[in-house]
Image 1 (tube, rainbow, N blue to C red):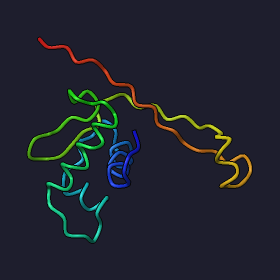
Image 2: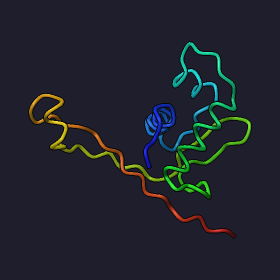
Image 3: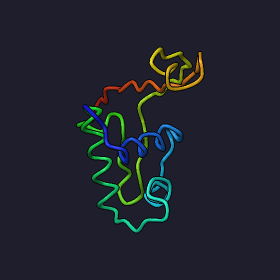
Image 4: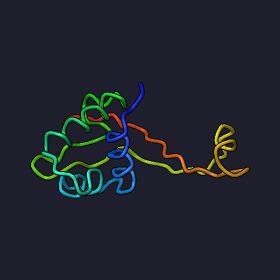
Length: 108
């Protein structure tokens, strides 16, 4: 599923703070810097991101009600050489890729 630019930027911000709560204010300032937007804009971007990730039960992105969001899935960063990237960048360009691994939640 293709992901629009703003939900992708939300993902990048959450990945850079994996495991930490990112406040709504931090997200709005980081993704929509200098623009006047409402919380609904952020909520919509997170909903699109969750749909693209198949995160229907908040196993990847957890809402911290009234405060912000937390990327709770384990994240592993790996350097790799992407053949298609060589044509767009310098030869042998190295790119970082984040792998998100959803964890099944258990209820007590």
